[in-house]
Length: 304
Length: 304
Image (cartoon, rainbow over all chains, first blue to last red; front, side, top):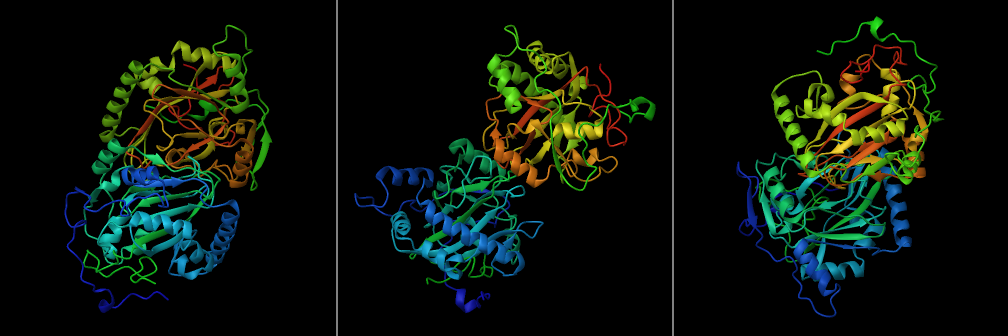
């Protein structure tokens, strides 16, 4: 269904590598060479001037109760249905928990599922996204994430852009993620944590990516991981914000912000819909690693 | 230094087993058959009437800034010194992280270390403890815990009493723990979580304890673990409280309250001193499992 592409399909010449990573033995911090908010704010913008400025400065924006309880119920039912379905059924776009068989994520839901396709095109949402990225946009990646109760594992700190750049060939920082909470997020059930301001630095990571790294990395990341010293510096500077709020809230965050989450031993599961929007002016080129790109269900290689 | 005891040293006849556990295939919830606060409150008591009532109802009490910053600095320096010392040196009372060699806990610090011995006898602290337990008390167990930054692992939900009863032979619920924060505790660096009210139910756990279980269980618990259904019921009833506060704060909690903590991927370590006080009228008998008791550095078998 999502075969690997042939070289002629992904060998799109890439611009100069502004953000080299996984090529040196020493981690380096590089200043961001791209805007954060690409759209010029005006009175008809989809965000207030304060919201736009907050996103620029901190790299994220939390919008409480963006979706209504009715909308959420429908998506949550669909998510439960898919979780049950894929407990038994194998599919390459279904990722399981490390060391177990529980479903952790289902990818490409904006293509495979009518409800989530509609959600990804929600006009209130895309108006905000298009303002922040200053152009039309398309879905680079989508997934639903399950963080089960009792055994939900942590996601270690990372910048999404680091991976999308090195492994997928995304040239510039002109993409963002939107996470839609389908369950209430508390401090104690492994909510998203971000390092405000970290999106303005690029942490070049050490080591070389092994071939077909993605099969492992979606379960547990080992390459493209920021080093402890850089993380400590970024946290000393910006602190840590924890994103908590009721089901229906959303958080938009820049592709380069450092984020992660702790484990969840509580009985309260945490699940969300995760949509990544990329600017149509920032489509993928050859991966900067020089390796084969990841499959299309993880990183869309054409605008559809 | 802490040899296993010979049978004649621990074969103290035990009272009837009010709280059977690890003997059935099915988990059971039993009502608590012991008081929570044993001391009668009066105007000269070491706690206010409200504090005493809060502890009785919820099973824990948080006291912010109980110790001064100066006291904390001294203990933190000592903790750092011990952590460094035992990085290299082996000792049976030093427990390391699962799957690693980082020091997780050092036991029996109230005996092996002059500073922590003094701390365990702090008059302001023991006045409160003796009020709650309604008698003189002694240290049943002490340790310092390190929850390192980046890689701090979770502690799964458990009741301490379940283990102390089954593996150590503690007859009744007449003990409590005091955790002294040596670092600031935030929502995001894996703080203690408790289930308020859960101390009034005893969750009888399934399975039989293997011999010498403690060697593994101090790193990762596998027996004496409450089942998901009982946990869900208790959380539905009492919720989850997260104990956060600055260094120097303390939390006292009943031996039977269900508690645990999530992982800590943040750069901010979390360490504490952990003191367990038992009533002199509740000294250990033969373990209710019928097995050999755990060594003295984990569970003091005599009042010293």
